Image 1: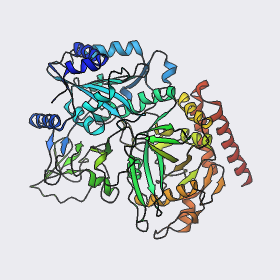
Image 2 (image 1 turned 120 degrees about the horizontal axis):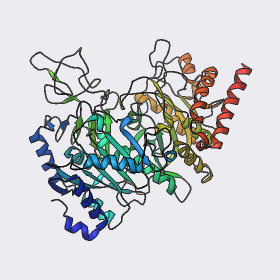
Image 3 (image 1 turned 120 degrees about the vertical axis):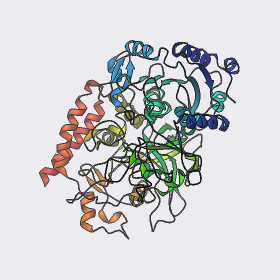
Image 4 (image 1 turned 90 degrees about the horizontal axis):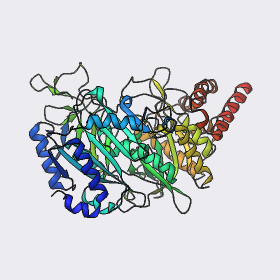
Length: 598
């Protein structure tokens, strides 16, 4: 049964007044306050099936699973249509698309005027973070999309629980979304960090329409975190339980499609059967200092919204088990047996009488364009994951021992190395340069700056963001150690040198042993690098020369990269922290000294 306006107005008149204001502008035929119940969800699914907006999958093989197809022009985060809206342009910074607050509101009000005529307006209250956690935050998304409602039920703690926890408070993120006409030329995803408002129109792709996702959890939350003294980061959170039952938690920042999900959900390889990987989150981390000065993290989300391409029983067996029920698949192909399929999932056995249907609903045969979109996704509850951390819903979060930065680099960046200090680690993250992927519009395989994997998601001036990171160095002496990893280094034949996937646990073991003081490392100009023999490669077909190549520090290559990095840093002007400049010049000096010695 839906929540009733008359009941909510007695509890939170601020919320009802805002909803009435939006309804007056968008003029829907009806308004539905979502309670998050199974009955409500089933009703929405039935209506979408009736309208052909959802496709039912084989209910024996994939019970309660459905396929959704977004418009062919609306298949990824659209950075060119994404804006940070502030009064002062410098507060948004040059790495964001900026629009002046008043101009943005006038533009959006015109587009939202009457946009929900003939539709139902859904009010979706939600909690980001464990219920009852002092670090949880609230949001309300107004939308005319049933797809958004059923997805938010998976991705957040949504409905009556959120209303009960919010109570009479006016401190919640306000999100307004409409599919509009899906006109790509009039698509806007606008963020107003100064008033905690998000407005999105003419899109229904998850990354642009699920406003709890990157919009709230990073862009708006990040701006609030800076003012309130915590951190909102594009990071996985996972626990590594060793053979003695001791658990070390790590957080890791990886750009989309750079192995972050597979790392968070890693399955221990042969020989590591007594190890366990216990996931807390695969995408977002909210971090705070506890009373003991430890940096702790919660996952604000309740679901996974993962890239489907190349996910299979070898790369991510636990995730493949997770998505066999209660999942929404977006822009994947449909097999003849009405099961979801995408490139890299499994082998095909097609006949002329039983063709595949591609992500746009067209008959498909091998040899043509991809059957599934490169950014196809699935949405599923974290609670279904077979190796979920028992600390997943801990209101206090988990203590982080190490922070990892990592991205797709074919050369230069070693398999793993450690920062000399917190400040050096901040520089390490600020320098991240990665190969682009299909998760956002644009070319694939081009090197692109992505500091801390946050360039598309930082809701304020990134120079101030770097300073916020540095500020933690003076707040605690118990901060995590910082490392950089790179699973994607290739040889002369362009083949990957490191096997990756589950074997990455061997590198994680070196990292956790390093934090515990169990292993030594070689001091190089860029940081502490493992000795080739200090990473366990027993059972792998890796020669000593391959390991040396994986861990080699290319002094000339680093100096060349730093030349372009300096130009990037200078682009922030006086908002770039002086402390980070000192770290940068120290790194250059160490590399030049090493080159002279060689």
